[in-house]
Length: 330
Image (cartoon, rainbow, N blue to C red; front, side):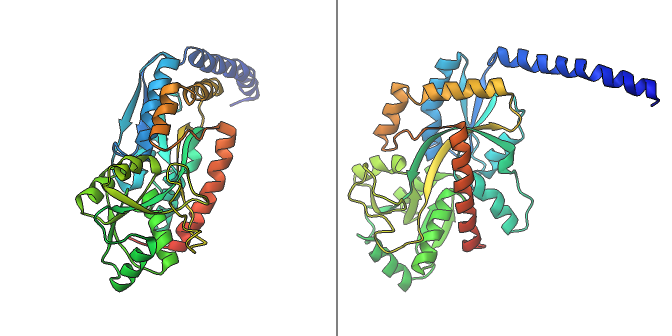
């Protein structure tokens, strides 16, 4: 390319850039003009699904277009659905409602020398919706009335008490392995495609323990089908005020929260991100959303994008450190 061609190309660049910027602005100005898909990387019945459905319904009313919840239960602790969302176009039409395992799963891939299915840096946090401490549940028919009963039994029968999870290094798996490591016990890990199937397995007696959010356990405990033994949070919670924390029971290094939040892809145009942030701020205040979450024992724990981004970074650092400490487990 000679000097004249270079100067001509340089002169044309601002016009081309302006045209592209105008096109992006025009696209965002009419957002949304078609259906929006909200990927949930787990089956129905878990914390992410609990968060997604009432929020999607409220967003549909606010944005004026259908918001379709798409449960992509491919297993792997949610990694499959997270990766599908990461690969979508950053246009606001594919959103992701996922859990705290978002940051853990790429680290687990690296732990086993596998290429990471996705990276957290591919996502743009929009809003946190829920944030609950995880609870340890067992069938009501189980012989253990306290956490110490379970620990004592597990020490007598190493590797024989099965617990369910949403998949390797998913939220439920990491929480249980943190507890097992601290207690000096070995449990039998039985992975499922999500928290919903894991809870079904607990009710059927296929597994004997599970870690889950209060919102997915409250009704089962009230119906006398499950018993809760401990709370992974730093403090007791109002929906289970008599349930002791692991910290109270002497497990100082066992703390785990299962949060749910809405993400888009990195590179989402700023006007669309702002529209989604505004819509989410309104959605979490909708009476039907507030009522659904409170009835489930998981009150709204909203954070807007800037605060949520910092929260994700801080929580991810803590969870990645926990995964490295746990090491390779199946």
